[in-house]
Image 1 (tube, rainbow, N blue to C red):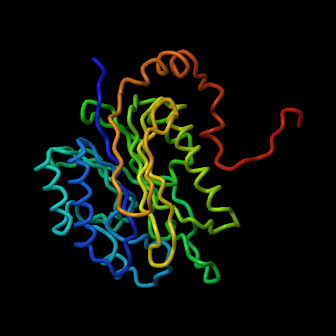
Image 2: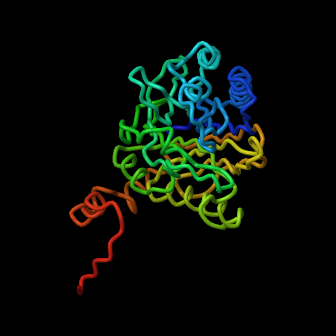
Image 3: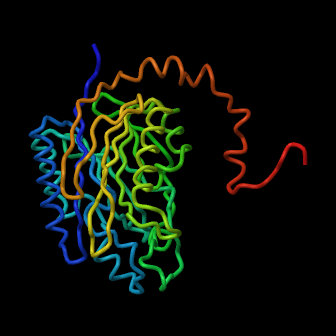
Length: 312
């Protein structure tokens, strides 16, 4: 009998600087309840789901940044109601947040929470985009390299709701190595939250092209690794800066099963056939039969591109 899991992507509209943590949690709880009413058993929330996307600002006072935007424990007093709702409803979720460890380390992190409200797994974002230096002439900043360390937990999967599930965050979706490492561990589902500005900070790029790249990446990564992929946005005009939505659930075939239609709070849901990829995993993407890692060494030996032609 095929395994099915009804999964929801719970997109958030903008969270502004002035919005309290309590207000954000209330919206997340409402989305969780809506997903439950649609029959979902697993909900994927966005990256940095409790606050505005604060890396767009250069801020000097790290203590204030820590107090306003980071979580010292999860669940905290303010976020606990979301975990309690999950337990009451019997529904699991993925959620992104800014983590401040007891040792004073800071990560862009995500949690995998079970239907009992307990934390099953944690991921810390590895591919941090943007810059660490101040760019006062830029329309906005993208300072993830200033506010976060590179994740130190690696790419892992968990037995979760009768599936094998992995987690990624935002910019990770642009790096095929991340998906392949999860797939090599048997990933059947990849959950990923994101906050992506409509405007490219580095060079002029039409917004429609940015969305196009987002969608083709999602479709290709899901297909080439024979996994279900759930990508959930925080979107809309947040403190005057626009982020695009286009939250998606993509099948292992590379087909978009369902996509959000707004840049506001919105739940999309799909009854995922987890075994849909079984034939792909046995044939086209049978890693054991077809991969040749002895020829892939350059991927881990070299970070940047170098011109090294075979003929010198």
